[in-house]
Image (cartoon, rainbow, N blue to C red; front, side, top):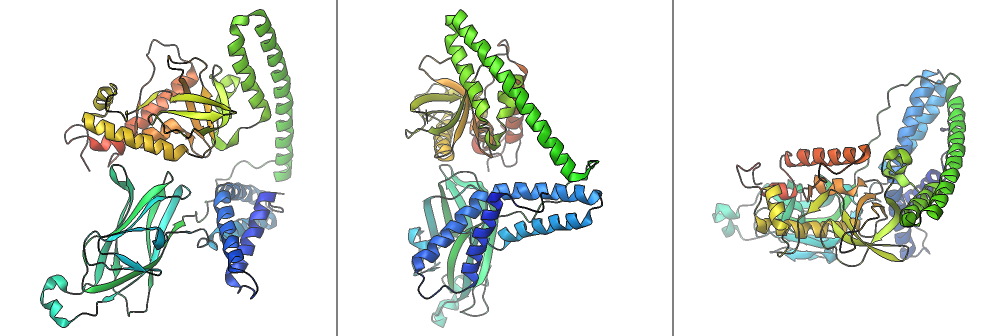
Length: 505
């Protein structure tokens, strides 16, 4: 039964986390090197971060099983499943601090009057003082910024208080931003207060957020919104703590299986085996037909090779969690595409946000993303005028957006496994059009459109398109309409002048 045993990866995760928790709660042995303690903590953080998504998916499956078993009247089994879910939730709740990514002051660039000594950041005499972490690497996701703060009066002569400007304050305003080429990110811009402490030794924990980071590396900036020369403000222990769900609500009850959960699992396994047997038989027959077609019509050799490789990859079952398999089968309507798995972004800088090179199995491919167009990064590119009309912005703003889109694509795709559906025909310069997918994200074209970094450009209406292509293009157009109507709009849409479809932020 699902509740009686955990999958191997969950069991290993639980054991590793328990080891980490024990190391935090129990004092280390006198002979244990500090390097070993640090390495163990790093391993725990990595394991918990890498397995969080799978754990959440498993917890949701348990929630559904709990409802089904309870509907059958097996309350003892339902209680056992509930206990297993609570174990998983407690696993992440108890180790949230271990998952935190520290923002080390030694790696920060200080601005204004800010200064640090040891692990303490202080010196807030002028507006804009603070710390900046450049090209900071972290796992994309949702976080809270946490740190500890103490605020008291500065030990200065009483004469300084003659002017109200230098009176000690009861609260201090600060800001935390993610910085891009076009300035602070509106989505990750947070303003907050630090309040006066009871005494000079009491530090209070401050939590700021939530913050959502979609790329890595990022540039982060912590600054004061005003100067506080009559106060001593000391900050320490900066960290980004990942946000873990408190738990998923139980799913609505479904019609229970007549013979209980065991019978349902057994029937599911039998159906899966039968489908796999039928799939293999159909694949063998299809490959034999392709071989005959290549022999009888040599002009189609290239297309047959592409289709043969696609079928081989389907047989290997390398599908991942992106849902790509659903649109690459024969029923999906994209049979003319070459299916490339586990490609990597090439080391060279992308030409633009939608044009770049990838490496796959020893070959380098030039790729352009289907149905979207990013602004050019080169001032001499003639397409800037078309993009300016599309976004209704000035041409000089188009170039800025193009450079930002190029940097966004480089940071977002770097070191990630890429799945591409590539059209076999090539442009005059050898570039191939493709759909690009990422694990746990899906279609990358959607990401660019959602951030206002790409314009949707469907093919001409007189060009024949199958149902799947029409559905994907309609989805992109709907996302673009939602993006430009968002308040405030992101990316290029935010640069529209007043009265031209939007307000400048």
